[in-house]
Length: 208
Figure 1 (tube, rainbow, N blue to C red):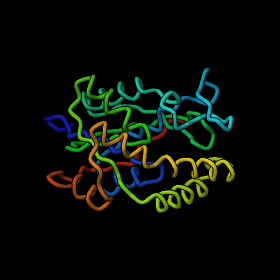
Figure 2: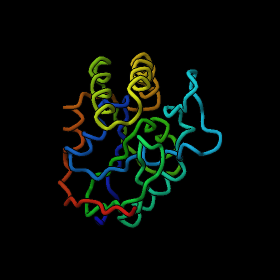
Figure 3: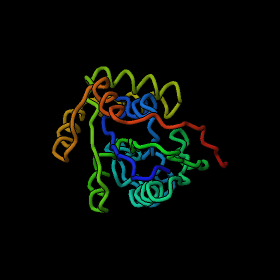
Figure 4: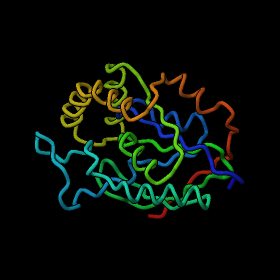
């Protein structure tokens, strides 16, 4: 671990906007907030108007566990985090996430907006950026990704994608009201890499 605390950056944006890709291309270790979803058999999961589990509702994931993992990672330089299967809607194992001397640490996922308040209440100094891309671009990137990974049946993906497209404007307004700065993908890459040395990177080991 580096001698000082790493710069913590929350990355928000619509599902499919490129949050994971941003963390990857900049070389910053990333805590995937989506790995803290509850399993599908968790009691009292929220439901959408069409009757399926509403995975876009913050009540569908464990913010407390995500915060605990983040705090341990900052304090000790490593933490074991869940490996969650979106297609199976359950945890399938875990992996070790290390800082390896990095001075930049990202946390990304669709619940990053809600997580910002959680982090600040815990006393974590947090930078916050929102990936701002056109709705039609995000819709296509999300659909292509989800179909390729077989995350859900195609009809559900289309219905969910259309709903998320309609909600994208409100999501951006929510992010800006919470304190996020909107950026294009190119500007976000520059923001994360400026004055941030590239950390050594390792492939996490999974325990199944």
